[in-house]
Image 1 (cartoon, rainbow, N blue to C red):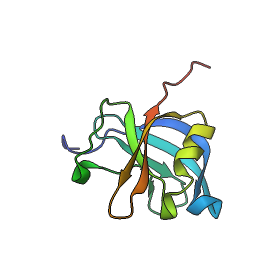
Image 2: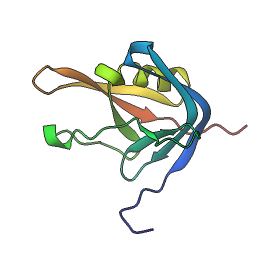
Image 3: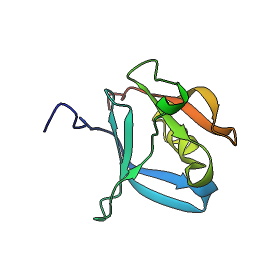
Image 4: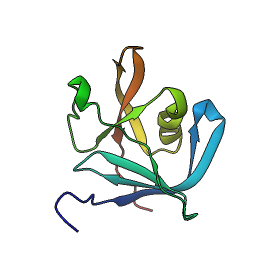
Length: 116
């Protein structure tokens, strides 16, 4: 592992994530790397992971803290942010309109795990 490799930690198991406005749903493990803002869903079915977070650096928008991620809420990403909120993994910090179509991106704060 190099310094640029993500350091992913599990933040939720058996989490249902809706894509494309609820037309597609996958269940799996959600992993997060606070240093890079990477958030992925691993369904454990041998298929590649689903990347849930995006970078808005091209639009001059950066994360304000390590516990924040950006999630696209248009096209196939519609429903992902709400799925993370519904699962209790995140809360909305803000929204951004990006690109030539003013597409909605959601800034989420990843919530700390609760002791069980």
